[in-house]
Length: 289
Image 1 (tube, rainbow, N blue to C red):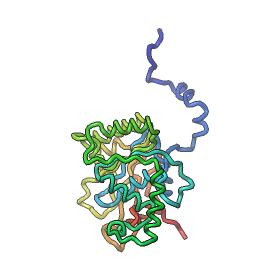
Image 2: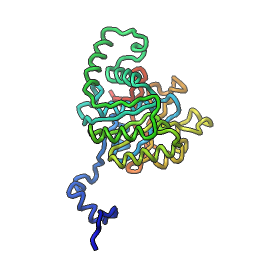
Image 3: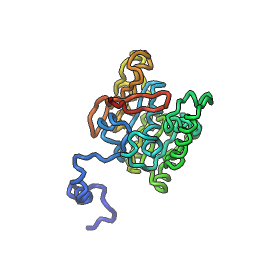
Image 4: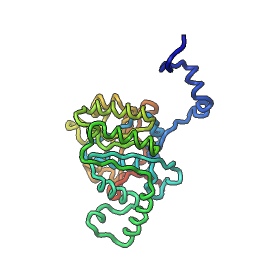
C-alpha cells in the first residue's frame, strides 16, 4: 500500500536524513537573530525561528522601547556599537500602541542619539541636526516595515506578516501590544495565535505584554507568576523588564534588569550590564572602562 500524501509523522532517522550534515555542524551552536544587547544575547542565545518571545513589564518601564530597539537593530537602523557584527534582515514591526509617526520619531532619536526632549520641543542645536540627518540616511535604507493602524482588524496582522515574509523575506516579526492581535481575543488566545504564526512562517515573533497582579509589590523585581498564565505557557521565552530607578531615581540610575524568566532552549537568568538611556529611547550595553 502506497501513501497518497506525505505523512506528518517522521522517524528520527528521517529527521536526521532531512537535516543532512547541517545538524552535525550546528550542534552546540544555537541559530537565531540577536537582540543587539550582549548580556541578553548571552542568556537567550538568540531569537530562534518559529519561536514566540514575550517582553513583559509594568506600565512605563520600557517594553515597547525594547521591542523597537530589537527590531530596529536587526534591520540595520542604528549607528555604531555592534553594527559590524550584525546580519541585517527585513523586519516587520506592528503596533496599535503608537502611530507610525511616533515610531518614526523614536527611531530617529535612537539611531541618531539625539535627546528626545530636544526633538519634542524643537530646540535642536547644530549637532542634533547633523545626527538626525545621518540617522535619516541610515533608516531610509533599513528594511524595516511598519504596520501601525489605530486598530488591527481580525486577521490583519497575520495577513500582512504572511505577505511580507513571502514577498520581502521578512525574518523577524515584532508586535507591540499582545491585546492588539485581534478583536475579541483573550491574551491567551492572542499568544497562541502568534505562536502558531511563528511556527508557520519559521520566523521569530516578539511581542510585548502587560504584567498583572503586581499591585501587592509594585517596586519588587517581577516574576513569571505576574504574567498571564496562558501567555506564559504559550511563550518559548519570557523577558521581564524592570528598572529600580523608575521608583527611586537614586537607586541604580540608568540601569535596567532584563530577567529571562522562561526559556525553553536556554537558561533563566538576569542579563548582565544593561543600561536604559531614556533620553535616547534605547537600551544599551554598559561598557566597562
